Each structure stands twice: as C-alpha cells, then as structure tokens.
Length: 391
Image (cartoon, rainbow, N blue to C red):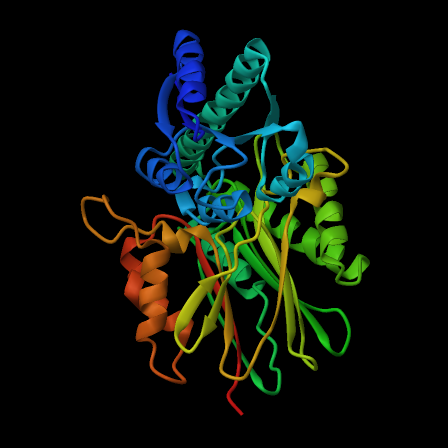
C-alpha cells in the first residue's frame, strides 16, 4: 500500500482527494502549506507527492528545490496540480524531475490512474534496488564459493585493477585529491581525468550498480565510454550525457545502470561546470563551509528517450583561490557510523569533516578518517576534491 502526500491549501480539495485515494487503496497524509509539505515529506518519506503549484507561503520552484535537496527525497515522484493559467510556471517545474501533472479542475478517474501508475513504478524501483543489491551480494557469495582461480591469479587481477586507475594530473595553482576504495578486491566505482585541450580538464566520477567482478567489468566499460563521450562532444556536457546514456542503454545488462557526475574545469579562467546523473550532489567548499550544488538528474542507462538528457541539470561556478569542488560516490554517505547500523555518515558527516579540516589540510583524507571507511564502509567509496590553491 503506497503513501501519498497531498499538498494543497484548500481543505475541501484535500478531503476530496483523500477520500478518492483511500478508496483506491492508498494511505494519505496532508499538508496545507509549503512548510508543512516539507516537514511531512521529511518525516514520512511518501511514495508520491501530489503538489499544488501555488501554496501560500512559498514559491513552487523554491519548495521543489528544498524537497530535492533532501537526500531521501531526491527520487520521490512528484505530480503537480495546476490551473490552465499556471502553464508557464508548470513548465519550469519540470527541471526538478516532475513525473506528471494534472490540470484543475481535475478528472478524478484520470488522477487516480496516474497516481496508481507512478506509485507502482516507484515501489517497483525501490524493490528492484533492494532486490538488485541482494542478488549481487548473493552472486558474490556464490562466486566466492565456486571460484576456481588460484589466489595468485586473483591477486594478479587485483594488482592490474589497481594499476589501471587513473592518476590525478598535476596542475599549477591547483591540488587534486583522490581516494578510491573498492568494497572487496574489485569494485564498481570509477573515476577519470580527461584533457580536452591544454586548458580544459574533464573530471568523471561514477558508480555502476552491483558489486564484485561483474561490476568491475562494467565500470571499466562505463569509464571509457563516458570519457569518449566527453572527447567526442568536446566537453559539451549535455551532448556528452546524451551520448553516454544512448550507448549505455544499448550495452548494459537489463536492470543495470550507471550513476555518475562529470564536469569540466577551465584551468585558465578557473571556471567549473558539471552535470550530475544519480550520484550525491557535488559540494562547493568555501572557507570550510559546504554548499551542495543541487542539480537534477537520474542514472544513465535506464531511459532510451532521445530527449532524456534535457532533464539533466548543470551547474557552473568560478573557483576562487582557497575554494574547492568535492565529488563523491554514495558509499561515503551510506557508510554506517555505529555497530547497530542505525545511523549513516551521511552528508552531515561530510560537512562536519570538511569544517574540521585544518587550513591547507587534505580534505579527502579528513573525510576518509572521519567516516572510518576502512572499518565502516559496506560499498565502494570514491572521492575527488579539486582545490584552487590560495594566492
């Protein structure tokens, strides 16, 4: 049974919708303001949010940005309710991955059908993620039992895997830190550095679904394909996203996907621009303060729509002396920090570790130690920090 959050300032409308949805088998919670909507969503993590485009206490785009900035609500389906007069505003909300909309006054049968479809898809997605993780863990255990290769051969494969990881470039006026820790002997995380010309460096970080040998094979393919996309499209990020997604949907096994972020640093103008496709938000570090760079975008390899890349947001900034951009895979924030595994390191742990990094210190090393990744991580963990040195 799915949980639907109805957000509308009109009590009669909320009651009408609640009655209809409860009869259709959904559980319902309600909110009459933008603030209540955010609090209810944070507390209950609904399977779908039915959101009126005009709530009295906050602009719709601002509310959507706040919802999507919550790690647990990044992928929550949101349907917008809007009057015909709100068409222009409605179109702007799609940058926050709105799954559907319905015009007021609404057709009840159409609304119920749409909500039913989107909640089923969301529940199926949650189940498939859980099942996929369990399936891959089962495969890892089975491979460990059945593997016939000798310890020497496995050790040789591990040495080659480590040797193949890219080395961070040396750039005057910059420091680039990298931490790469696979979960087990081989991993599904990847990263890369690609010089597009003498001034523009492309940086890639990613995570292939699954673990172990199969993920290690897929990540090698994904890394090379994304790097090829960036070179082919000469650093044009949206074209590179379209290229990579098109090729990955054709080449990945069914049910597999690639979460990634990639950006381009102009080392002369100190301009940074990136796109994010499913990994945690990159962070802009200024005077030990972290600002998540909220950019919309789902994983690569799941949609064959030709215009899918238009839903991916991009972010640009000027990197001033003493500032940094931090990119990381979800293994960092999902590392557990207590023995009962009830609390994750999460974004708050990253922010706290950054604040505790001494001036001129290694940000990545501080985060690694604070998360105790050698003992707490149960997934691949990768970090890249690009810092412009103080003048």
